[in-house]
Image (cartoon, rainbow, N blue to C red; front, side, top):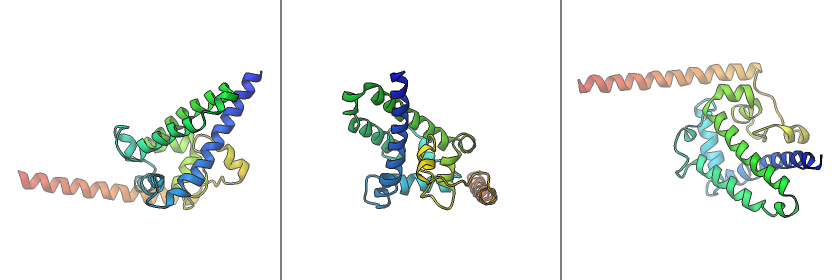
Length: 190
């Protein structure tokens, strides 16, 4: 029973760290363009807004100086920083490290497949696509958003439906322009 309690505590703690780092480091320190953490706001959020929640950086190799690699680097650094917890509770620490891998898998999937994100992590979709991107700090689960009052629902609202239709029309028009430009290039070569 004690091990189960430690696992649950580790999950709640890891989600709390996720919430705190997202709010105060990635959005706090990350607003400054010269900060290492700027990748989150100035790269990741920008890509998500331009591509209807998809971040093309997740389609690349993990290795490269882009937001996906920096995220993994930050997760590894966080694991090292939290390692003293292992002296007091190896179970809590191990749970938190597994949660870090879970976080990365969920976050990557959410930004490769927007429909999956809308279905399984709508709070994270809300974080990126709603007008207020300074809410909904939980990526994996919204536990601390509910506890701390930072959960704002956007998915499924009339505003979201209108915004999504507008974004999809813009993306379709952009794709048409690119196709027309490619056809023009092909016609010039022939």
